[in-house]
Length: 115
Image 1: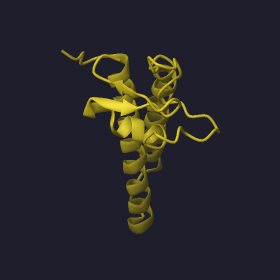
Image 2 (image 1 turned 45 degrees about the horizontal axis):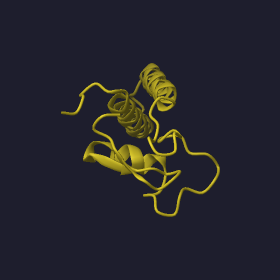
Image 3 (image 1 turned 90 degrees about the horizontal axis):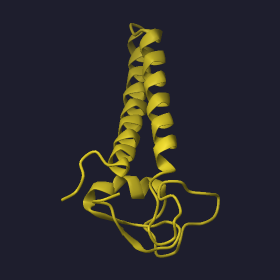
């Protein structure tokens, strides 16, 4: 049975929350430009929320490792991803809850239910 609050799941959720904060912040910014009725403090709070979730992801990403090559699954260096992988770290996070992802470093399939 998969662990609900595993480090890998919390890492993926923190990225989803950061993406949501960024998306909401962008829509709110456009809203404030269009209506001139928005608050700048709300944008600052959304940015702080985004930054907090990115920081959580940054810390947790070092603990989510591929069991085959022992490299971090959601940290991508400037090198090209493995040719058999699904793309980049964002595709790993986007597919995290599907049950398995492909390592961007070695190309092996990784079971995400117990990470």
